[in-house]
Length: 529
Image 1 (cartoon, rainbow, N blue to C red):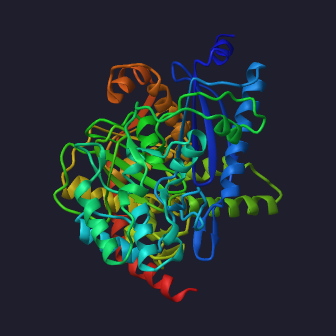
Image 2: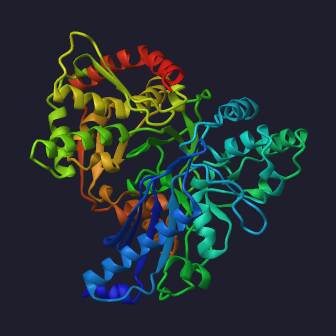
Image 3: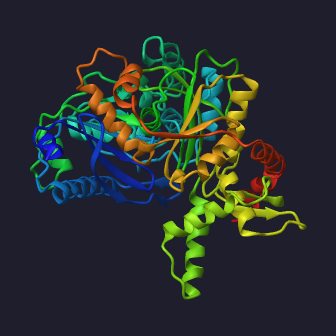
């Protein structure tokens, strides 16, 4: 009855996140407790050489997710959801959505997963003396310029998926600073795009005959807690097909999945970090001071409040594991013992802990798509083993889990060993951690660091986005860092795991084999068509 009353009084906040394989909505009360959820499963498409989602996919999926949330509220509490206290939208970061002055999409949405901007990435990194990864929005823009693409003649707005959805809901063309930092470099002293770098880019583009100013086509930058508009009538009808959702609801700045992950794991202070492991995998470490050097393996982005963050992002994580589990499920069905996929995951994950710490001579590359961190241009999943290795389920699955973290480990070894970055804690969340303790133990071995998983980690980014929406209307004078410590995580339940020395040494031995054989994986991209 108490929750029902909170819903009726709109003492709630709604977070929606458009992830790579699922769109999820989480409704929380004014104490940040999840009270209802909804979801919609979707898949990206590889069309004409581009990883994409159509606008129809995006619109239909978002509405389906919200409808599922409404049904959950109805089933749980017997009431119709017509109003919430605040809303926040997040999505997979980066990518390229180009619009003309009338709001028409000029070319199919190019997601973070595309690895077709190597020329632009290299050129911009040298020009700006700042690592510009292939998936960043400005890299996609520059590559389109290098390709002489016709749509640039009509370009009026450069957007990400989260910024696009926010503009559909509110009419405001804005981005949270964390989301903006995956579009173009941010100056954390002013929480805005780096002015000197903007000028360098504009000078370069004018030489090529383009007369637009980059600042004019990028969204306005906002930090967590700032006013980002309200839900318009057309926005409410866009989200809720039943047209019962009220307009006028405050909507907080849109963020990327990196920012929501930091929020969901209370990792927004200096010397804290988090790992998100699902379809892709990335780690975020909030820095005390700038890095000494520029590394292609490390992106510099920001927290939702603008603090500099070292991000190691890898395109591939659980996709190869998912494919193997699907095949094992098929085998069990053929044997007359059909088993739920979740149980097969648990069975295989727990068996992995029995494997040799170095996986017994097995090594694999989980690249369903290209992996820029490894200089791998295309998806070529590969399994190799020494001729004297024993192909056991335990060693095989331990290898699959190691492979999911291997590229990430290479990047973090630079941070922790070469740059001597200090960490007080690493928090983990995402689908890989659903089987209790296993992914956590593997992560601790990969980073040789204590790893914490919070009870709320299963809610992930959508919950983190809902918390940012709650913070925006909290009327709190506290910084986001203090707000999370004092109001959200003060009594949060969590489990921490210390690294096992045998696992750490085994992972390091595995990485020697992994890195020495990367040339074979690269050759497969060239030869296996």
